[in-house]
Image (tube, rainbow over all chains, first blue to last red; front, side, top):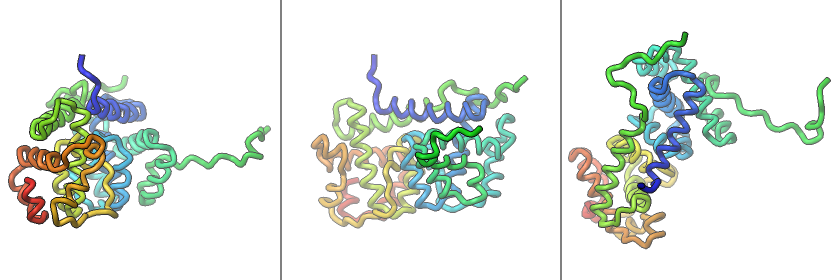
Amino acid sequence: MSKHTVIDKTEDEARLWLQAVERELDLSRPACFVALRVALHFLRDRLTEQDAVDVANRLPVLIRGIYYEGWTPSRMSKNDFMRKAARGFRAHAELSKTEQVLSGCFRAFARCLAPEYADTVSVMLPKNVRLLWPEPSPPPAPAHLQDWHWG
Amino acid sequence: MAQSATPTKNPPARNPFAADIDDAIVWLKSFIELAGLRNDRDLAWGLFGAGLHALRDRLPDAVAIHLGAQLPTLVRGLYYADWDLKETPRKERHKKPFLDRLDGAVVANKSDPERIARATFGVLRERIDAGEVAKVLRHLPRELRQLW
């Protein structure tokens, strides 16, 4: 029996991200795999170069490799990217609702990242794309209000 | 009834990451051979990463990104780990300070940094297009080019 190497671990971590996307989108695995790639590129291309690299450093290694695929740093407009994403999704009829697919993937990403970092990403995004990212979790209520029960 | 997967030219693999893993293993085996290591993939992965990072950090951002695009997916993920744009590009002109940058696994295992650097560059020379290698070399000073 061969040993579970660091390479096998990279696959395990990547699979968690794919499974998170599958849970959010509830579509076939091949469709979710396409969605994962396109959504990672969408996220990357809506960030400044510095922020794009910062986010990448938080990703598992194989997911990071997919994220950087074909990268030429330039901030693509949301509309241009939506058109590009729609082309990327064309082979899968399941992915026809581009915006829904992207926001589902973003929910999955936010869940896979550390919660406080997910909120940081939200702030990095331009306003029109931030709408697709899950809203930051509200800060915990002050201690003296935590036992308060309404009605 | 929910629709099933749309048939595509390539039937969906059960494991969509399998090809990426296989490609990385081919590169890693090449590195293990050139570096003359025991077949310890975990160790080799760390050493290969140290070699790739030292090169990446010595290149102007645009060239580093161009090189990243030539790598197979999982190797690319390794290459880009912990990149800090504020700290790069570094300016070492001589072999010794460049080799001192090979840290992490190299230091932890008391590996010879020159052997690791040469093996890393050897893999790149073997596996990426010669024109792309030439582009990278143009941005390195003579002493570092001699490690290729």
